Amino acid sequence: MMLDVISEKSKEKLELAKIGKKLYRRICNEYMSDPDDCPTIVVFPDGDDECNFYGLLYLDEALVRSLQKSALIVTSSEAVAKTAEMFTGKIKEIMKVSQEEIDGLISLYCLSPFEKILFISLSKPEGRTAYRLVGARGLTKEMLVAIGIYFLIPFQYNTERPAYEGDDMSIIKFLGCL
Picture 1 (tube, rainbow, N blue to C red):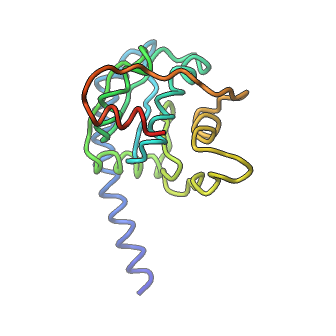
Picture 2 (cartoon, rainbow, N blue to C red; picture 1 turned 120 degrees about the vertical axis):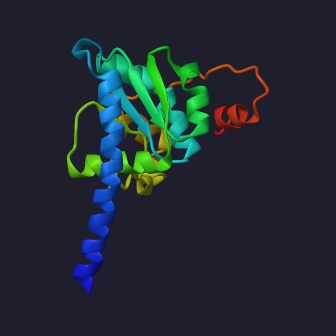
């Protein structure tokens, strides 16, 4: 009985990984053909606006410190897609994909990790449990994203916030998510 459940879960993960493989091939074909101009793939897999906000806020500094020229943003979040370019000029492209494709990319990564990809999440890929550290010894989501995901050490708070003067309520809500 237990083996049947494990077998079924494994099949589901493999099917999801096939979807991720299609997305990863598309990314490689479209954006990774020039070895001198390969962007870092930055995936925003959750609907956690606060985590996504900090992922965008510290993206520019993370690229500078890791000597990367650009980032390819992969997201299913409308807020991330609409606001990413307000945070940095180093975005090569924003790929708006389905949540299923993102979950597939995560499943593929769990089967066979690959380089130059970052997941802006405190709970994904599977097994990441940084969300449990929020509040422990004064740790904030901001610190966990900057230090735990981007490895920005020494850490300094980024007090710059993008300016927005439009009337799109989803952008206003996202930028004011704190």
